[in-house]
Length: 564
Ligand code: ATP
Ligand code: MG
Image (tube, rainbow, N blue to C red; front, side, top):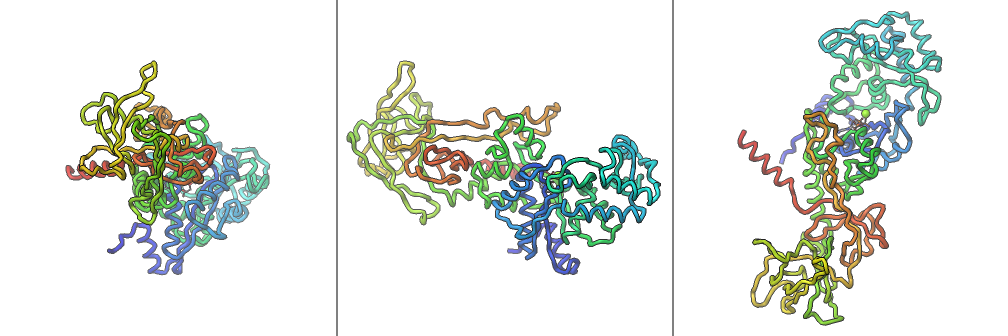
């Protein structure tokens, strides 16, 4: 099979052929340390580190810490932890944009000396007004023709903290009539008399993204600088700075951002959900953050596989959340132990099972892989089954347990319900059943069939657990885009978390470690909570149900395509 290469790989192949970068591939992942990473960042991480791996190159981790106001060292720690967890390693190539502040300043001085930059004393608002619109050219700043000497003197004073925030800016002298608004004398430096988390009080001016980013890439000898599509119009500016300074010139390449259904992706919006208490924190298992996904039970390999499947393209699209679920389901189907747990227990008393007796039955650990072997599950006179698996007065086609009906207990026996016990309020408290000892292992010697197989646990041996069931955080596929202009918090799913406190699990789960993933038969894949779970307090999060909605979506899409 020939591999189809994505457009970035095609560019790299061409560059390797022409020897543009001497055969090197050197990428970087440049997060701003102002929040935690989400699955969109994971796409960029997998892409940058993945390409470096594939082409025998290297990938830097670089903190783009050019904005002192929103950044913090707690974020730099968390970001490193998350990238490592995803399975990537920057070795000794951890860099900070703030380490280049001196060098950047020198470059700015060079631009001023070459008459390519000037100190502008318009206010922010005036700069906006002078910039013009898409249809109209901008007006030159009245400060555009300051002499080189005056500019140098002012810039020096800006650096030394002699002005207030906003009093002056340093701007590139390009073209106020450019069709590309980004080229209309963009800002290079602004005054920020603020403490930076790494450089402290040293600096009073901070470089703007467009100036800083290309220099960071150039200083680090990056070959292919991958960024998301909204920076397409910034590329001429990226090139302009490097060309004016005549320094090493990486290639900026834009790719489409990842968006997903039923969630929001920007750090600002995620922060809002946290601050307003819709979720418990950056690691809430409902969030698309790396730590949220981790806590929910996603594996690093599933996130890498997801990134691989979605690929890279140039135009934005929204990926169905069901695809991510499909990927983890597929992985866990291969790797997760099957166990039995009852989420909403209903007591079953087997009247013909000998009092005080118990036995151990063999259960298969993973039908996908015989290597996982079998285990012994205790069985006794009193069991728990799922409340939903019983109906006193069932409608037609209800094949589970009902008075007079027979079902199979997984790995055990056929079971028939005879009568129902109720409390004063008429609520069912227990079922009286009989079992058929001749059906041990799950089939009847007389060949009679049953239509359902239920999971169960022995009441005497069961261990108690809390189980957290999660659903989409939003009720709307695209909560950011409502026709009536309502903002995304309006579409929060009130039922996105359901906590069940009285769940009953088979005893083999007593000693599992946090972050262990298992399949509860018939119920889905679950993960022992990373923080709250211990052998004294069992807590499991449902990662996904067993129902694969992605397959359904694919069928629907195939049908739609046929119609077209
Ligand atoms: P957000 O908009 O969520 O705050 P950001 O772009 O401001 O994200 P950065 O820390 O600047 O976050 O991003 C680091 C890198 O991750 C950038 O190269 C950026 O292009 C990439 N990135 C961020 N969000 C996505 C996304 N949704 N899909 C793909 N790449 C992304
Ligand atoms: Mg950003």
